Length: 305
Image (cartoon, rainbow, N blue to C red):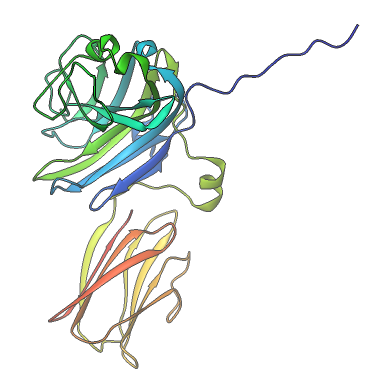
């Protein structure tokens, strides 16, 4: 008699990844302030930033072709550091499983009544019958629903639709931003459940090996240094990592140091052609730095991200 075999199926919902654009920032955080909720000890720290319609941060959850008709429930919790006009909303990405040219994103209205937006811990349990979703897409001819942000439907309307009821879900995201104005401060997403299944929120092994996690915008300091100064300015320090900016007067070069120790003329070398230089460290984990020259003094701004 042979040994029994067991088939291990691929998970329906994949490991979450973080995405952001423009002023938005996203990072994994193990900040002990927000350990009251969540199963992993990590939270997804989303920062929307200054809003101009396309600034956002999001959690992307891959989905293994779940039928639209089979998504029955969703629940998520998040901590908001300030009351906002919009909460963390859900987006369901769907396509025709036999023709991937036909797809749509079905978006929950982020300021719909019932989606909490208050300072502190907020939670939302999706009511599939509430008219709160709109969609945009390609190849949706034949649907009985109308595309556009002013046309709201319940999730049950998509499940009953002639087209969408035959499609499958390839991604579900939880997003923060996409507003026309204002500034969206930090939120920490701690729990996500889809069809009762807990989505484990934590960085991948590769992410854990590549950097130590910290809050997205816990450092936002500005120091002004005159052009030509050789002073060393340490802008920020915390128990995990030291961030320092050096101005070298011999060749007017700024060095952004991301290491554990602050050493003159070491780090990321930023050429300065004159006037002033604004440094926006968009991702201090990898050392991505963008800058723009203006006039006047050197305005050195480091934003942890």
